[in-house]
Length: 139
Image 1 (cartoon, one colour):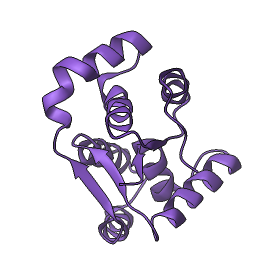
Image 2 (cartoon, rainbow, N blue to C red; image 1 turned 120 degrees about the vertical axis):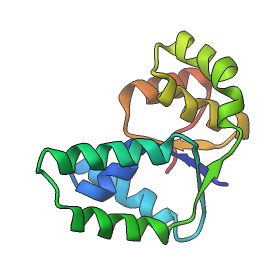
Image 3 (cartoon, rainbow, N blue to C red; image 1 turned 180 degrees about the horizontal axis):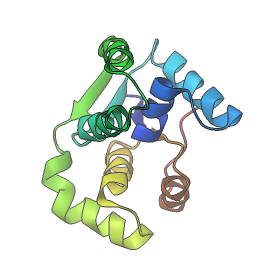
């Protein structure tokens, strides 16, 4: 595993929104997946599904586009960390408290710290916490 992938980057691939620099960063991360792999906490799939479902429910995104995006994701080298759950009520909770993060965001930081790898994210609060914790931003 070469880096931890956050939902904020993943959803840029889906919607292509955000600032030009955010879109460019997300593109670089996606391009990097051709020669490396990413790892995500077990909640990543639920976060992605939640964003897609909310967007479809609001009528902002058709199901056919979601299906195309999910098909694209199925061809990327993204692995799920099975140990995230075991650390949720200990290490992850402590990181959430210390850095004032949601438990979801803290799970990405915990994973990057545990595996000693970089973090691909566009979330400003998570980036600040990662920097304080000594985790480098991917790419």
